[in-house]
Length: 182
Image 1: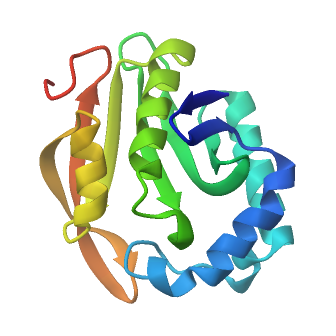
Image 2 (image 1 turned 90 degrees about the vertical axis):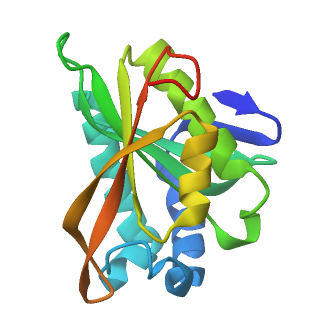
């Protein structure tokens, strides 16, 4: 478990399914702009349990590090390193995160990303962190900038959101480098 201020991250657990489902069901409209549509089962504890099982299988295979974000010992979101490429000549992963609406604008996303960058460096031995945001997702872009990420390109028509193909801004950070330098 890693902690920064009032924010903690740890490996996701099967018991996190119910609180995550509750957050995702309540916040479905708030995330519609930023995330792909999901089947109805995604918003249930059973659907989240199935998803968490898959994430933990990926963790055991070394392709993902799925983390729960906590505040005051309550699950308030997720931070995940996906697409892990641990080969000596690659050593990179892609960071994704979300915070439940009631816990937003309190610094949790920024602290969670900072903590997962330490996991990527210290535990996973990765060299490069990548992320992407919607072009209009300024809050998420601020989180990445504050954690030393720099934008490096645009992926055109890269994700289907709310019925339209959208562009994504691509971000990078060389791990171990001083924040702000890539």
